[in-house]
Image (cartoon, rainbow, N blue to C red):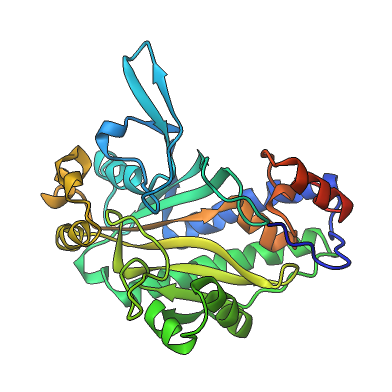
Length: 333
């Protein structure tokens, strides 16, 4: 369903929007790399499903698959690079305190389309090597703060270039666990809880997503084989044009052998233990890491005050969406 803000008037026209998107992507990547000590690397658009490297998201989304006659294999377009990045850190010999970032482009064919969701996904996928001394909540929170600073710093530079932008962000992050959020708003759905808490605090990090809450349901689905459900979360900002919480990043400290073993059982995914990636992880062959994805189009939407993700990325939309957006003055690329 498409939300149509009343009297919506984008601050930037099409030409300025394209210029601003380029600036955001350049400025933010530099700031992110400096904040987290990351190096840019090249990453795959597709992987061999037999490796277990593709991200299973909530476990129900169908990856786009195609055959490669010259290789004699089937390939899957990535959903994200959550697992590939960790293997790359191992293969490329990255050391503790340093990490990688890459442009991730994906197709999520089963995505339900609305103002915030498209079948085309673009994000900065990053991953960093840590050790036991930093595999904790304090380090997770410190990393979230660094990412928020990079986002707000990017907005500052953007507003210097485009003085008519009136986007305002809160630099102070409010941290709350998914269980605390359910306790605070027991009658609301998870998405309604997000809207309520982010409307109040503007910049929020919801922790511990994936495991079942007291209600018997998780706040949101998480694959069991990348984030440690006790040390992860979602970063959300208040989006004024849509009057809603806008998720910019899903991230976390990754599973170690013990948490992977536990989460595979909880999720009923024990068969994955036989996949090459999972065998390496369970055997302690991969480095301890923290990582996440930061939506490129989502960040552009947030900083530019856009009402629809189609204003900052080129994708496919149904005719009804195109019609209502056109009538409301929302120009889809």
